[in-house]
Length: 223
Image (cartoon, rainbow, N blue to C red; front, side):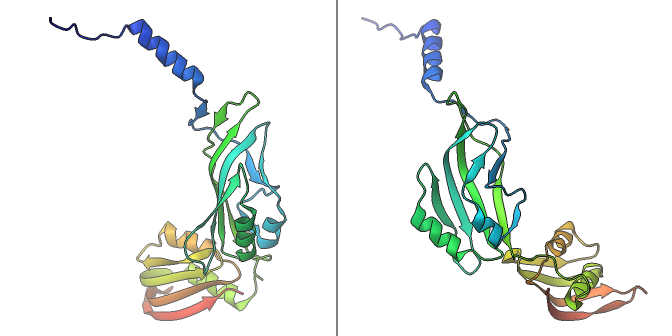
């Protein structure tokens, strides 16, 4: 006897889909932004002292935190330290990472899920991250190193390589220099603070008379 093909009623299929949707936790992946801060920090560049004073990740406007990971990138340490933050804080690993923190460290909160009063769950698209700076980041504007770095920043570069390391640069940043300074190089100079080291290697530039000057090989540390 010839078997009849198996058909699923459209109404039954729709009913199953509705049931699945009703039973599945609602996790929104839309481009929603939520106000989330670590303690009362209102900037993503914070001093080591200020960061250590904070107690917890704060979810504003009535939401609560369900899950999160905390990631630490620390100069001089290999790899990234990942710490369970929520639902249960790994206090031993957390305290170890906090003790290792130094200027130039980068701390971020990842895999965040929050919920509202009705237990609807959301995955915020905010990036919650902090760059750890020295307790005093504003160098004296009349210091020799500051004046020299401002001069280097304004040179009309032609070729060469410039390296940025130290404060704000947990990994050495390499900038290949060409005519017409790139935004990449400009942004690197703007990030400099006390403890940043700039090394120029075989750099050529044009002076005010459009004459080629170089090679320039030197290192300047901002203090």
